[in-house]
Image (cartoon, rainbow, N blue to C red; front, side, top):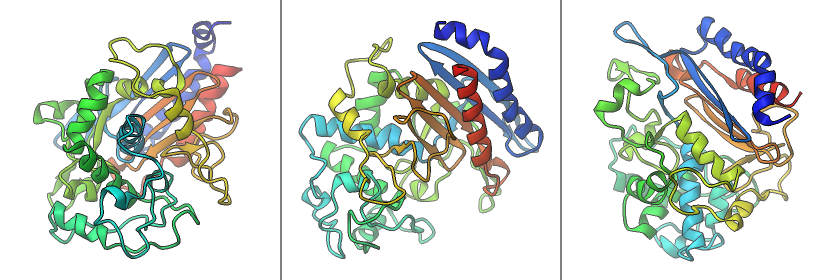
Length: 366
């Protein structure tokens, strides 16, 4: 049976998977969600609930709703830009970062490589408050340059937003332009991701899902990046800041799952060589860790899609409630976008996400 036929035949099961999200919305766990399931060239679209649900505004979700992607920025912007720079011989994955940014040295950082930052094996801390001190972006950069490692680079695996902020700065240094500009020029425009970018315009606000209530401003964060450190850096950072629609994210994810040409895309943005290297386990010497470059690989402790997926599957999540999961063996991409922090950041979607992905897999493959 073709994938198109399989999707049609198992539509009831796919509806059951989507009903899991319907229940979460009805229970007040999240205001709304969008999911696009791409399977062998055919797409199932789901949109329910509200993008904004406040006393002043109640805006329904549509398939074109734009979400704050949070840490999906790491694998949708920072990773591909760096891999393109590697492919063009402007960088080497095993270059010490200090080779290109001499100020990023000392306190055990001088040997940290680009590869280690991408794979979260650099030894840098997971997170630090860079936003509540009134520091300028330059002052934040100086603070990052003074950080100490928490373990020798390469000796462990610890998810680090700070490492990706450094990688965003590295892209800016090598490209000679802002991260947002480099992303638009090198990736978003060539790939035709028309609903994606940093710092969206006020005109786009009505299409954007609001995130968390900001008690300082006494309003929900709506059209502004939710991540505080990225906000302090002007809204565009290597760890967070991207806004995108589900359709754009599926378009991007297809670069990793299918060599078929994308309609309207300009050129081959990611070569087989860099894709294979990014998806190779970089943490085989570290217990319980299965990390590629950026991506969470099937079997890692942060693997969120549940059981049954191919061993070559991989993905990533974002703090605001976003995720991408890719199964290249089965030619499947699952994008699930929620603004789960809209009702408060204590609202977790981890179990819902696992159940949804397992239900989708059963619907497609059985």
